[in-house]
View (cartoon, rainbow, N blue to C red):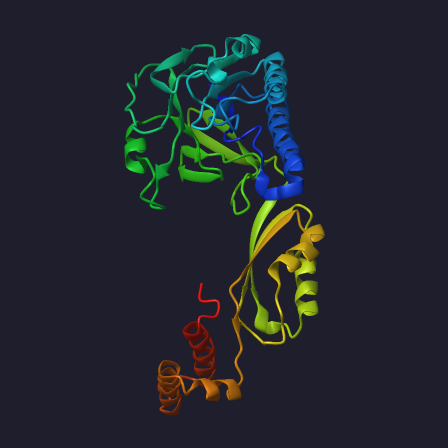
Length: 362
């Protein structure tokens, strides 16, 4: 027996995307488009079941327009014979919210199963040959009461897993592996992540934050007797990139702007860090630079980490300062003794004196 699952999560329909300013409405439409593309792929690939592992909506009280989109899209799945398993997440679940709305629930197709956020005992779906367990973690993690029979045990869990990336993660990987599920579909992390050979985050189908890595995918999961095969499928349009620019390579603001324009892309959110030493003649107004470049990127954030390049005359004047003077003399001694190279000396002088003066010390 084989089972094809299309997995998504953290769609956040109805999110405001205020960081995108005048593109916020456009991005909301892109998120909807990525959701629809996920449905298209599930239908085209003749999937058996469609997993939504939490945070379909951005809030527990989505507007009627967003609700209608969900009804329409899940109806398309149902009409194609594809079952949907829908787990509420930490963003869209609250008592009295959308998943307690009788009118909304009544409009969902029969092929949509709303999963319990504490579904630790599992529910049989005999036509698919699976037993599905589910949990959305708000505070305490509950252990599952797993049965072993002829059904395939699968879990949908909306939670953060500790894989060594931060102490705030709720569930240890070893604990998760000890549950011995055939496959665990995870939500809450907004980027694609392979946690283990049979444990995956799909991430959000479209980017949600300016510095988000790994978004824009759904997962095509094929479960067979011999194992689990997982493929990433691109459905989102926007990518986030990080650029580090050494400003010392540019003798003028015009050259810097030309370089950044060349890096631009209409489907790219760029997070740019300007680093290095710049002359006093190269004046930077970050807000004006961002405004100038906004037509060349989907969105951009620029952070100025540069330091002023000081001339020998300026350094001589500063040497009268007891602290700076001692620092400069210390470095000169190191250079003259051969302990540091001329290049290291120059860098240490420029960076150290700037920091001691309080220039861009952040």
